[in-house]
Image (cartoon, rainbow, N blue to C red; front, side, top):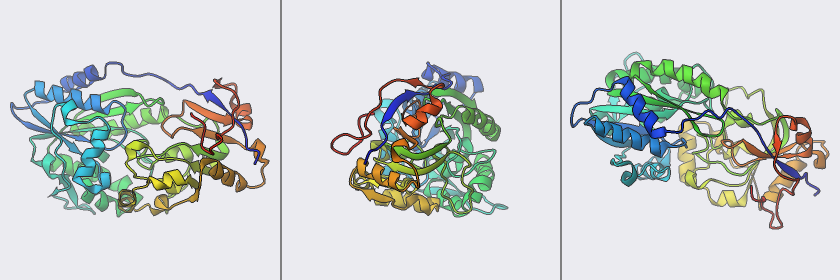
Length: 411
């Protein structure tokens, strides 16, 4: 097949970022005036998202708590991720650089929870047993648009209190209500955790379109909701995006949990695939090919159902226990379904193009990206380049999509 050749281009986004990560963390903790008694045990809740500089942010938090006289420890706050096992969740943190020897504090990983009062709510309320037993808990999370729903509060500090600190049991409890639970039950559940638990502080993080730390803000528990709303607007304004709203084919090199909770960001690809939820108006992409899993996802291939074609290489890396644990907990089963499997990337791309409808394949509108978190550089076909050439920098020449072995050329 005479496939479209692609050319590498660079997009430009706002690149405001923090240089002194450690200094900003300690400054925010100092500015907000946390009161810690000498010897107080302080749990620091750290999740499974691929937050840039999370190891440095956690290490600086640990150091500052020690300076204030506290005894910090880390709690994995990640619902069903890591196969919903203590060992798996600890390994996830370690893969992000949050290791005991580096951060200077122990990781206390357990799936056991304490049930908190839930009178008047539709759902039960839980909190990690180690965090609940501490003298105080600090929540760290990135604020960003959610991949399952949209509302005034999406991914952020409130969600970390509930789905993160509530572990697998709380994740199941909220997700059984579908997107209604995510939209409407997380804020009220977080309020109960703040009231009956021991949350003393939060660090809200916003990243720019280059996956760099743009904002680190210290937040008091009673201000979590307001901060989530305000920082979400900033995060939404600084999200990366594809340079066009209509494609015949999007080729995604890799998906993974550290890229997005749904493997690849639904806000980028324009596919939600949740029963009852409307599909995004844009972008409109006829076919999506995904060729590989990231190493840090540890075989969790949630989101592969958002693709139309995958490669045998990707399929052979899937840990179905970890993937299905995540999919079933979320209840969004379409995202766990297996697409058509091709023997290599070339075959997957050829099949995708053949099923795009009545198009001239050499003139197909094609973009290739490394993943949905990294969009500053991408490959575009000639027809796409004609539309975007005035707003991108061309950094290469037109090349074949795949090498002689049938795999994608190096990015």
